[in-house]
Amino acid sequence: AAYAQDEWNPSKQISAYAGLRWEGIETRSDSAAYQVSNQSSVLTPLLHATWKPDEKSRDQFRSSLTRSYKAASLSELIARPAISQRFPTGANEVGSPDRAGNPSLAPELARGFEIAYEHYLSKGGLISANYFYRRISDLIRNVVALEDVSWSPNKRWVSRPQNVGNATAQGVELEAKFRLDEAWADALPVSLRTNVSFFDSQVEQVPGPNNRLTDQTPLSFNLGLDYKAGPTLTLGGNFSFKSGGPIRVSETSSTYSSIKRELDMYALWKIDSHWQWRVSVVNLLTQPYTYLAEYRASTGALMNRTIYAASAGLRATLEWKLGAGK
Image (cartoon, rainbow, N blue to C red; front, side):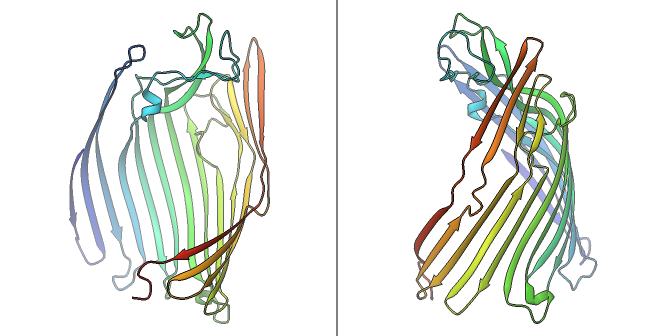
């Protein structure tokens, strides 16, 4: 990889930098049965600018134009198969496919635009809003297909990563970090951190509806609180929410995931400048998580439902900070 970058300040309120990066990756495997030789490279320019409405304030607008590059991982390229444990011989089912890599994968490329506003509070708090848009080409996604394979005389269902086409993604991210007494003078000195994100995407080569990116959550929310109850005691917790819903993976397959809610709480007792006890209770809501995978074709349909049980946990940790108090 190699890059060049230049920064300049046209005025006290405006700063900018532009860059150009080249990256090349070569992957080889000398396995006798599953040889791989894959080369990819990309030239990615970027432009970033910051504008402060008031040069004496830290409040600012940020904007970026980027071109990003995501190369296929080693596990996605190496063709050596992982045989289904349910059906190690003979024919398997579409719900229990073998898994194998794809030596011919091309890297994902994305062109993007981003704009953000950041407002800084008097005591170090931050409130920000961010919008992004990305156009993705050569999207990598696992596709299940019936194949003639070298490791079995029978046709087998195989899940392989494929470049399935183009996609668009966009989203809004809102974040706030501050102490409550920054907003209300008589409030307790509770530190609050929260963020909420709204995402939307569309894979063009997959018929809709719900033809979105498989790793994108339409809505996520986090809320954390930290309260210094005394000179040596801090109490806090964090609540997180992630929406689920259906995803159309291809013309014949789809998935569904349920909503995730998690609540963690902790107490931190500082013994001295070096030692402290932390007691945490995790996953207090103990909400199970459901995942569905469905395959439909003219020959029939198959649905796999997996329910992941959840349980709360208690953790006690004695922490020692090196160099504390110096």
